Image (cartoon, rainbow, N blue to C red; front, side, top):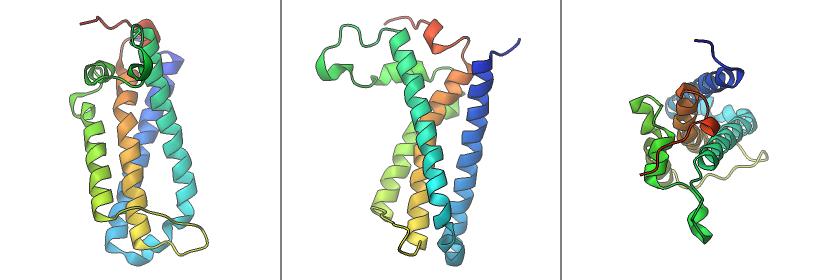
Length: 170
């Protein structure tokens, strides 16, 4: 079976996201045990922000394609048009491997843990990048990358694309 160009790009994006999650996990772990290492990571923050932003936008685009293809907003009015219901989200990620379907919930757990243990992270280039900044930045980065990863994994494994696959209504 030959993959389309879009599927190849989606699989490549999935592998790049996985590599980024792995790299940030390493930076997070290393920052926990080595304060000096953590202070050198400030220069990577802008590049990592661009990567996260790109993958979140890709996840939003895939979700929008899924929603449009399945007319999920038809019949909804006002604020009901925003977002997917839980059952619609499960249909969106149904082609992802089972453990990856739960990554958005793991992501929410990481957000809660980070804000509970570290709190809000604010940093500008004029101040030193501390261990607290590194831990907060990379844990939030991992959480933002995990959230769209299940959508990306589903889109790269499904037959066809979201725009030509209709999901049966309940």
